[in-house]
Amino acid sequence: MKNKVILLVLDGMGYHYARRLMGNLEGWVESGEAKIWRGQCVLPSVSGPCYASIHTGLTPQQHGVTTNYHQGKLECADLFSAVRAAGGTTAAIAHSFFSDYFQASPFNHLRDMEVDDKSRPIQHARIYTMAGENKAQPATPSEIDLYWQMSLLIERHQPDYFLFHSCIFDSVGHHYGFDSIEIDKNAYIVDGALSNFIPRWRAAGYDVIVTADHGQTARGHHGGTEDLVRDVPIYYFGDAEGPAADTLIKQTAIAPSILQRLGVAIPASMTEAPVWA
Ligand SMILES: [Zn+2]
Image (tube, rainbow, N blue to C red; front, side):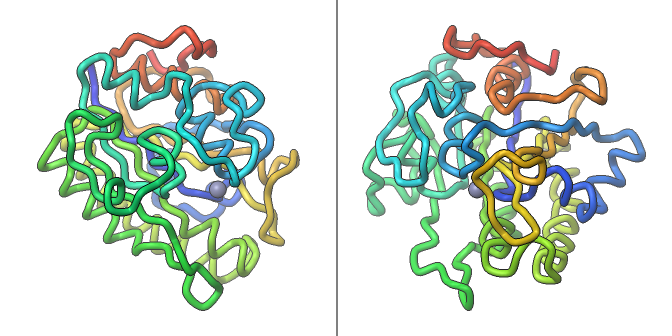
């Protein structure tokens, strides 16, 4: 592989709140060590459809995941399958929807929750389900524990492509609204943790991309078309040149852009031009 890439999907952390709340990420933008573009998520601005679009470069109308009730492995090419076809190593720490779409369906806890198997699409997977999630217990694993778990998998396996997905913002936003002290406090924790881990992952040789599947409104909802839910941040830590700062990047451009960075052949189904050379 030409480069190694980590993609962090912070579920629900849209562009507008990210720019207000993520002081360390923004500090790196200000100092020139990171770049940020405004991304635009697909419609509907719903988690499952966006996860599938980020990984296939297709719209929900094309890949068929139009709600969070979809079940079934997708048949189109995706980031994991393309990296595997090129002989690369794949890893993910993510919600079980990702396992269902890209690993095996239906999700089977004993087979799929913890995977270290070179023959599977996601060779090193640590999956959570958030079963029993409620307002008193959001059931999102500790973000910092997950960052350590990712660091450990990187040390053991040096995956070429690593997907990290966490649900803390989306879950807390649904319960308290995004314009809430609960979101503020969690943003402070996650942003602070990223200030320690991003340099560690960069030192391990990775480009690091931080984005979201969709945003949320102040009331704590998403699904439709307004800018608060559609605009997502695309922070980039790496050596590639990107497009002009005011370029709006479609969510369907993320998959081919990551493959280009990895040096992996882009499947014909991914038709958006890569944004990172
Ligand atoms: Zn989501």
